[in-house]
Amino acid sequence: MRYAMAIDTRKCVGCSDCVVACQVENNVPIGYCRDWVVESTSGTYPVLQTEIRSERCNHCDNSPCVRCCPTGASHFEQGGIVTVTHHKCIGCGACIQSCPYDARYSHPDGYVDKCTFCLHRVVEGLKPACVSVCPTKCMYFGDLEDPNSDVSVAIRHRNYKTLAPEAGTKPQIFYLL
Amino acid sequence: MKEELFVSGRDIPNIDPFLNIWHWQIPMYLFLGGLAAGILFFASLFTIMGKEKEMPTTVKRATLLVPIALSLGLFFLFLDLKHKLWFWQLYTTIRLESPMSWGAWTLMVITPLSMVWSASYLKELWPAWDWKFKILDDFEKLVIKNRKGLAWAMIILAVILGIYTGILLSAFNARPLWNTSLLGPLFLVSGMSTGAATIMWMAKDKSERLLMSKIDLLLISIELFFIVHLFMGFLASNAVQIEAANLFLGGAFTVSFWGFVVVLGLIVPALLEILELRGYHIPVAIPAGLILFGGMMFRFIMVEAGQITRYLY
Image (cartoon, rainbow over all chains, first blue to last red; front, side, top):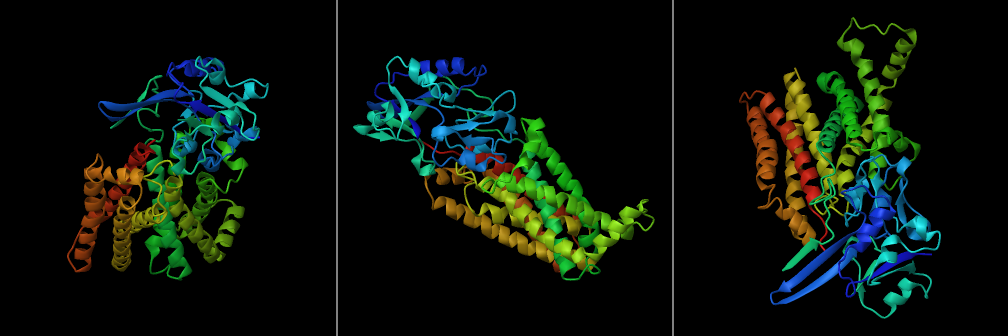
């Protein structure tokens, strides 16, 4: 099993519903967020191109955060989901330094916090909160090893990219182009 | 042109607009750890060579600073932790892939060893010293008998400690400024240089001071050589590392790095040491103080600048 997500940058309108859904579902403290939306504009006027991306932890296959954690608090859960065991985390900040996506933050209670792909929902057969609320249905979640899962179907016939693949982290969120 | 905006809004403390999760505690620890590693390295080296008599400050007096420096450094590391009461989780596991785990365990061993080392010389430095308990007297005898073995253990641990201060940073591939294998050797040499400067400052005997001064000159040259190579490596690397190097080549850290670290912290003390070796009288506090200042600035600048550098996508 390998959980992954695909996000259609052509369907996403940048409404930030995914961000709010996550904050509510996971009781994220005010002023913090586990996911966020980036609007990236490139080109020279008048030939401009805009890409909208909902970003979060990439639950990398080769996770630098899991590797550098001195206590084993950062670890892989089922399906390659990267999570932090709060009562093992000492708040040293190594994983925050190690993440090329700046997807982790120091929770006001001291431990490090991040996107969990809503593991508590996934084990019950539900989709992550962000995916389930998306009004344009531009996000797909599922098991990459299952050829019929939403995410496998979504990436089958589309070009996609991952973020900073040159960092060698093997990110598991695919942006459909 | 490329412009990126957080349309959902994002202003997480210490993460946005740029990473700033490690503050003064980390560079202070890196400085103290490097200094302690440097002193212990020379103390063990001269003990193994059987030169305790010729190098009394190195082996006996400067090492008294090591337990203080390490304890203070550990205290700063503790201050840096954001989930402090769980710090003991470090010692429930050994994680070979995590430099921080290596560092935590090395400190756990080298700190008590350095205390034992210093304690075994207390009687020699202060003949009136009395351990009061027989068991402590016996332990002292045991340590004195096994000093060479202790020195071998400490020299290995000192190199691990010194190199670890650099590897801690260089293992983070997400921070392009740190992500170079040169950082480990560079921090080791810089730490050894600050250690040599401290011994030089404390030495009462002229021949010991001049020997440490010569060693320090060699270390400074190696350090300058590494710094040149560091930037050559960055400029010949990928976009993110070129950008990282540009922070020092015209960017925000240009003056502080080349002015305080390279000129004031390396070149000026090296020139003063050369003058001293040529027979001019230079107050030792000036070159030694400058080297310590430069070593500390180097770590502050590297930690702060490194956190600004990142991947672009």
